[in-house]
Amino acid sequence: MDDVMVESQGLAALAGDVAGGSDQELVDQARAGRREARETLARRHRQAAYLLALQMLGNRDDAMDVAQDAMLRFFTSLGSFDRERRIQPWLFAIVRNQVRDLWRRRQRRPGERLGEAGEALTRHLVDPTANPEADLRRSELRHRVWRALAELPAAKREIVVLRDFHDLSYSDIAQVLDIPIGTVMSRLHGARRQLRARLGGERHA
Image 1: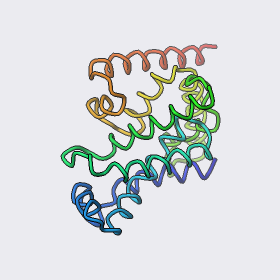
Image 2: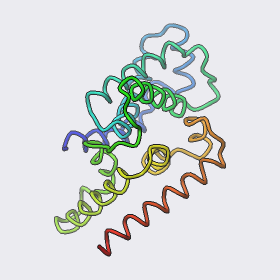
Image 3: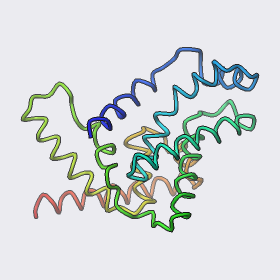
């Protein structure tokens, strides 16, 4: 799972990439046919697309395929993108649609276990500077959180992932999931309540 840790750490690094101008400027340049702008946009956002797909699918190969397809769709539909909006929610909506298309093709239920994505969901809980004892406690917490997340219905799990792992606002999540903000808030509240109940149950088991 070390490669997933690197992937998660890389997400934060790529999110801070400002080389080549703002996203809005890069979108304008990409629309004008500048290859460098497209490459910078891809570098800046493909890791987040891959990690979200991995967190939803639980399989690296599938996540890579979905992320690549999502990036292709992202660039082919760039002409219709509203440059006043943020790129990440729009891209995440594409990723989510690609994931659900894959589920439908394979007749897989969205609520199935996450498999190898559990580590990707919870790696951010580890402090790389912590001492071994503290790291062990965090590792145990990470696995408990993963088990609890894996048991959530997909509709609730994806909201937790978008809010608590990708730091999206309620309005951004509403855009990604195409639901009202009120539904986002109530669904997130319910998901967190279920997580607390599951984690509390494990603690007292």
